[in-house]
Length: 514
Ligand SMILES: *[C@@H]1O[C@H](CO)[C@@H](O)[C@H](O)[C@H]1NC(C)=O
Ligand SMILES: *[C@@H]1O[C@H](CO)[C@@H](O)[C@H](O)[C@H]1NC(C)=O
Ligand SMILES: *[C@@H]1O[C@H](CO)[C@@H](O)[C@H](O)[C@H]1NC(C)=O
Ligand SMILES: *[C@@H]1O[C@H](CO)[C@@H](O)[C@H](O)[C@H]1NC(C)=O
Ligand SMILES: *[C@@H]1O[C@H](CO)[C@@H](O)[C@H](O)[C@H]1NC(C)=O
Image (tube, rainbow, N blue to C red):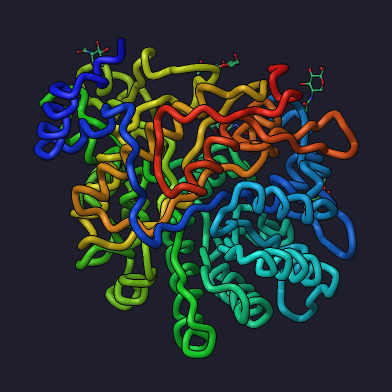
């Protein structure tokens, strides 16, 4: 017997949940309404799906270069040369979006497809035509394009000039943004400047997980952070001053904010430092009243830099005019979220980091983290299921940044195989439910975007981690797309504008072979 079917117990839970709203998530069997006007969508990015890496005038990006020069950069020694082949299959992609019934589609523009020299001296007609066709196809079916201007596929030529550690990137990126506002802004009303600065700067410049594998931790990551914030702000100001009054869109950044819970009562500071070093370093300068990098982070890096004999902090300062330029440079908060960690700092942490010599982002942050094995609900050991962490991160952003409107620009779950993705269904339901709890408790969330529309090249995981609502058959030259169970569940959420924990889709017969 389902205990929630007893009326007394249901009343008890409903009353209790008026008081303790996070527990609303446990009201299984209840159908929860989404707010009026709430937007639902799904997302991809250019390098991960388009393929056609050297076609129609496109030049080389850092991912073309990395995956060709180090063929086993990714776990399965693959690359995005063809990927989901969306450069040719975009009409099928839009058909899938229509099947789902989404309000919007988040995709990104390939810089090297539009500007093969990296600069606006030559605009590549064929590249522009591809995005025009995609945007027009979306609008034909009333699907709003939400466009990420930059999702990591930097022109290799700009990387040869230093990429994100060269402050000239502020001009280069600003010029590129201006071109795309002029080309597409008559039809695109949602602009995301840059996707996931932490991953770009820390994994790409501090470390080796992402292109350009720059590998200068505790140095390049901080230079990247400062340049990226200024480049983002440049695009915002260009849009504000030259385009907003004619095009009437909004513009913002998408930050990956994972949740860090203190492991014990002694770890509150460690969890705060984890948040600062993961996403506060980007969110604070843009969204806080004071602007600038978080104080705690500035202090830690300055103290350790001094101890290392340096004359200045490895974190470059933001001048008062730079602080002002960056502060407020986003209309809303684009939130990418996947999972949660416990953070701690104890004797183990100190002895581990004391053994490191030389600059290190991790040693500057000086915390350790772990996840609980019971959070693994299925195939994924990377996207562990912790919906309460989603609730907490949303409320933290809401409280810290003056109730800023939030668009969830990514949330999703990785499987390894199969069409009957019960674990992904559980994940989406739990996380959407936690988001509704956060809305109930005052968060101003305008929409939710599932990552991803379809399986794609998952960076260093290659094709081994699959995030798609639709499966893509990468062994088949026609790159056949097939909806998973989660696609049917998401479709019903969109159709009914409700979350029904018990809904069972009727699956077509061919789907039942897992
Ligand atoms: C990567 O970029 C470097 C610098 O431009 C170039 O010398 C090299 O040939 C490129 N490698 C590949 C495989 O594209
Ligand atoms: C990154 O740098 C570290 C420290 O210099 C070095 O040990 C490591 O081999 C480098 N990794 C790569 C992939 O270049
Ligand atoms: C530090 O905390 C971690 C995580 O709770 C624990 O596993 C470890 O044993 C602790 N170390 C010490 C020395 O207390
Ligand atoms: C996750 O699972 C994959 C595939 O089974 C394995 O290769 C990888 O080492 C695992 N990662 C962790 C952190 O356990
Ligand atoms: C292609 O098929 C093989 C054999 O079934 C499988 O091991 C591999 O993972 C598939 N590759 C992709 C990219 O799906």
